[in-house]
Image 1 (tube, one colour):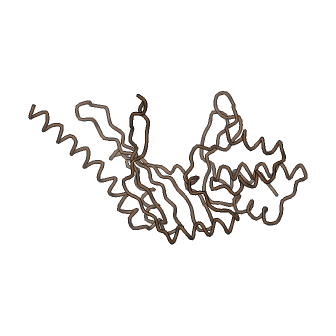
Image 2: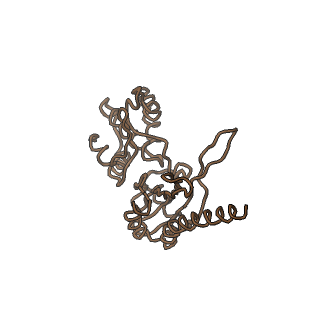
Image 3: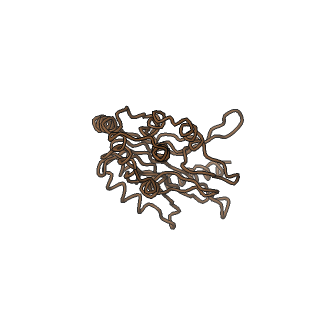
Length: 260
């Protein structure tokens, strides 16, 4: 029994040390608040020899000076008493930054909890930071561009996809269904609310819809065209779908078809 307990303790400590290093490396860079350093880390974090994989889920502009990003990294740790098997530990970084400085970050680890008898994933916070002054500047910039307040609860949204006839059944995604309803009613004011959304995928749906209204003879004001131009030229990517394929596409690549 003592040998078993000692083995379990050693196994836990070994796993903890292996995981602590990659966590520490990411956390240490985040704490510098230097986005340039974090970008460099993100490009070099993947290491097959160390069983570390990483990728950006998304990184795109919110305003002229601020961008939002979601970055994932995971570490595979061999299970000592099960040769050929590994446990995979997943981590997520959500951040808001200028091209050089981080205004907000949240480092979390993916966990699972039982809810009504079923295991459901959630993310447990390891570390977080928020620069209140920079965050206030973000809000000010967003309002100056879109003439509306930024919706903080919509930041880092990942469940909206832009596309048509998606999946095996070729069904339109929810975003397409809802924007089509506004198009059918020629509801320009409703579409403009999407254009001013915090969620980039909704903004692209709005540009698509406004282009269709334009072809029906509904004009946009100079101010509205200015917002369309800003969104169309944002750096970064959105989640798209076409048939069974779901993938990230550059915003400019998607919007170049809409000439106003």
